[in-house]
Image 1: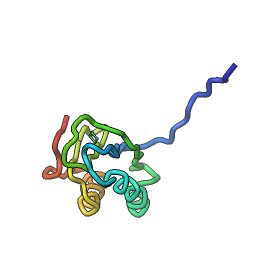
Image 2: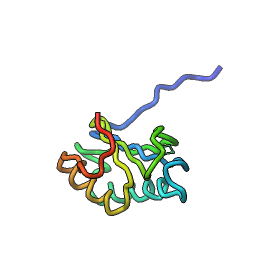
Image 3: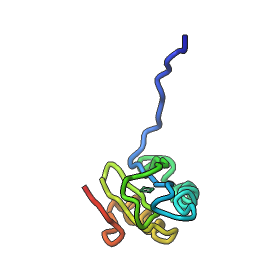
Image 4: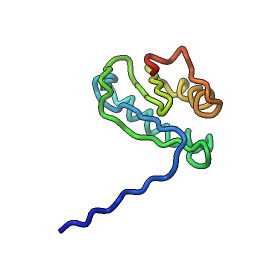
Length: 109
Ligand code: FES
């Protein structure tokens, strides 16, 4: 019989989901952005502490256009066409200062 083990998770302040699916980007840009995200969060000290950001890959958000697409929860903010440069601004303005970058948003709940 397989033992059921309760998973553990570190505390976090926000959660970024990055779509790595192949319908919102054509050449793996979503995965490349996800790979960059790890280093950028570390460089901004968002990989630990009170503002720690958890990151997760998703295979489709159901809004398959103009990726890379990312979602930031619990804020309910969805960004499109996220380049490395745009991600830098999102990290500084949204994740650190708490102010979403309005011109990059395609949906907000
Ligand atoms: S493949 Fe990215 S939103 Fe569908």
